[in-house]
Length: 178
Image 1 (cartoon, rainbow, N blue to C red):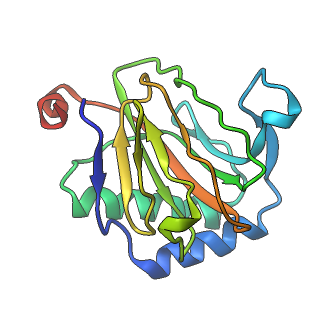
Image 2 (image 1 turned 180 degrees about the horizontal axis):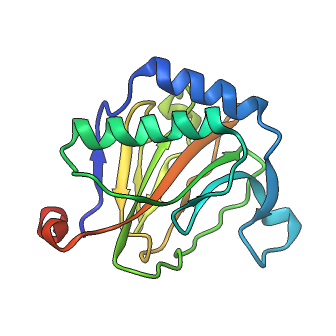
């Protein structure tokens, strides 16, 4: 699968509501990345795991599903079940964590910012297979989670809040991403 940047995926108002709701959430934890020393962990809200909603925040879950629906509708990705979804918070103190995500099936991930404003000079891009993709509000990166990836260094005092989705590909769509 080739890495692709999907542009203008989500209405700015929906991003803004999700950003604000995430900030107010009581579900932030420092469990990720698992098996890492504490100083390498970052704040994360785990929303959907193995296709099941694990968050108790029904409003945040509805916003997360709306973002997902808008991405798929605007880029004709078809209908899929969200197998995993989470929101992460990183800042300039974040230590790079190049990793591959364990994926039970043939899947892909979508990653995008919730921040309503993010400037290129602030860093915080998405590094995938040694290429850094600029993160812009409203855009999402579609990528193979089995290939090495990480958040690039954040060069400002802003907090970078990102949302990611894990989905399993269906046979009929595999050629679309090659």
